[in-house]
Image 1 (cartoon, helix red, strand yellow):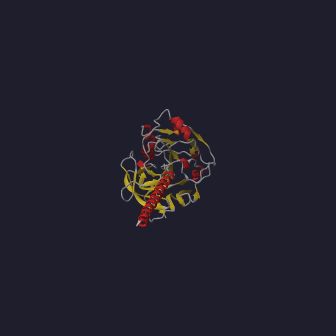
Image 2: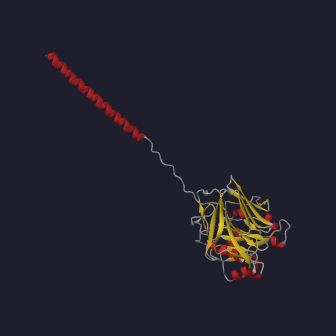
Image 3: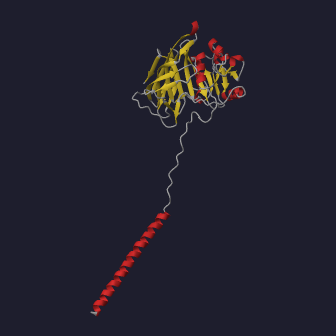
Amino acid sequence: MKNKKNIIILLVILLFIIGGVVVYLITNNKNKEEEVHEEEPKIEEPKHEEKKIQIFDMNLHTRPIAVVINNTPVAVKVQEGINNSYILYEFPTEGNTSRLMALYQNTPDVNVGTIRSARHNFIDYAHENDAIFVAYGWSVFAKKELQAGAIDYVNGITGAGPFWRDNKENLAYEHTVYTNLAKIKDYVSNSYRMSSEVEPPIKYSALEVNLDSEKPASSVLLNYGPSNVEHYIYDNETKMYMRNFNDTPALDHNTKEQVSVRNIIVVKITYYSKEGTKYLELNDTGSGEGYFVTNGKMENITWKKDSRNSQTKYLDSNGEEIIVNDGRTLIALIGADKEINIS
């Protein structure tokens, strides 16, 4: 009996010992897990900087400079400074030709040319960008509007401003005028307001814009006339449209770089000779059709301009303003009856 009691006591003691060991092991293991957990380094989420638009600084608030550039066939080879612009306008002019107007925001120390005379409809687009308008010469209609105060301007024909002649390729006298953007800025800084709150008439995206379209656009041909055919060819690597003029690459005479644009907006308009003269009146108010081209694709758009002084709106098929890729943009106004070939 006594032995039986001793066995029971031993079993109880053994159970207590086993229980204590189990509790110790569980507690010790838990503490180790907590220690390991506390020692694990914290993994910080990577910080991504917000992408910013490069072609136009929305925070700069400086007035752009709009420069009228010669696009006569013989003078294309002496063009300079176009690749420094952020918007490039092209307008039909008399004699089945076209003329360019390049907009510059930060006015770098760059020569631009050759500079040609103003047409009154060019003023509309300088105005909608709140730009200072630069030209050399003017039509009778542009002269009247500018001298009446339509917009702040510098016109070299009056003897004002930093202009000079440089006949690089033995051209006629009218194809030889150049200016410098930094010198233009210095020249006007004490005469005109230099700040602006006006944003460009087109909306840029810092993120890639790919059109939801099945219409290819690796080639954009704009035929202003027999001797004035613009042909932009898409480069898949750079995503730029390379400018050709009459089947010849359009090169900057100074840098030898081919002129290029990231986006193309084609604006189909009508026009007529103004008041019996050779100068054109562009019907660029109201609304009409056009095309938007970027990243090798094209979509049909409509344009709307309520008045000569209002900003042009470029609308997609849903009536929303189009968003363009971050880069230089060609806005080409061209007769609706002219050849426009996008493929």
